[in-house]
Length: 329
Ligand SMILES: NC(=O)c1ccc[n+]([C@@H]2O[C@H](COP(=O)([O-])OP(=O)(O)OC[C@H]3O[C@@H](n4cnc5c(N)ncnc54)[C@H](OP(=O)(O)O)[C@@H]3O)[C@@H](O)[C@H]2O)c1
Image (tube, rainbow, N blue to C red; front, side, top):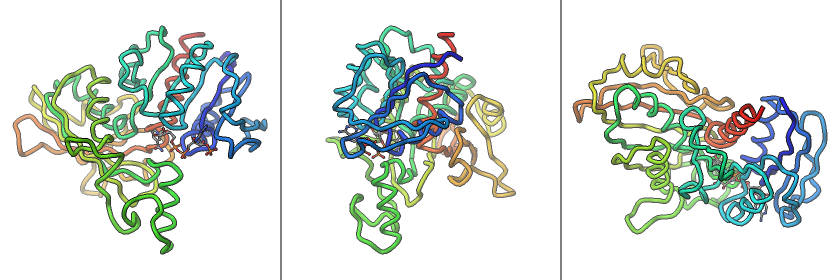
């Protein structure tokens, strides 16, 4: 494959360092690699495929001569800098929430709606981590049974808050006081992710609602409850979905077996179901605990688990970039 000039913005963070890891696993050779973070990281050295690269302060970045810019430095940085890279010719893939609901920015899960990238805006948004692992099984089920309504309940790992979340879990486990979450995350689940809105939902919950509709191109009723749990990596999501067509456990699982990006684990006699320790470190969305929803006619309840830093963030973005590179060959 042709070698490109790639910039990583937020290269020292949890998602940024996972971009670098995943790109090496996918053996993406680069022409130039530009690594940016805050001024605190100026001069740090990061190795990529055997060569050392220095991290620079984003404030001194040059924006030209970049083919792909992968952003994971927070919404305000994406707001300010993503257009600067894009306007100088880069294709930007942004992991923050800032551009996701912008009508001009495609919001992409590559297995589902890569065609939403028309190549004319060049600023692509990567969905929220919990959204990605929810919409992928829903997309395959929707094709067979036509979704009418969805309710999500998430069990989100502390890695979803970046290094601050991981450090707070580690410190509170060692008996130190909480410095990031409002309660001791080592001892309790916390039903508050991102800030509260007027309607008493959190921003994270409304992100899941709006992003699901945008990715699936469906304006259906959706509600979500998002909960932080004392797990380091890999989110779980319980999905209750109602369909137009008749559905049962076997037909639902058959619609999911062998689909791109999905692994079904549903062997309840042998404790076979998705758990975080299975998902962490790889790029699949695991699906299991498939049941009929007893509260309606054509409903299902099931559980998905995925590595929120990989398929929920870095790997999804790298997969988008790889698809574009292949299209450009
Ligand atoms: N964690 C997840 O599972 C996940 C999933 C999906 C999306 N995201 C999104 O990805 C983004 C990063 O999340 P994360 O979990 O990787 O956070 P993180 O571990 O806290 O990393 C933040 C990164 O941003 C850099 N940064 C901070 N302020 C900066 C500035 N003024 N200029 C340039 N760089 C700056 C940091 O550099 P320094 O090291 O120099 O401070 C670091 O590289 C967020 O928008 C988050 O919402 C995260």
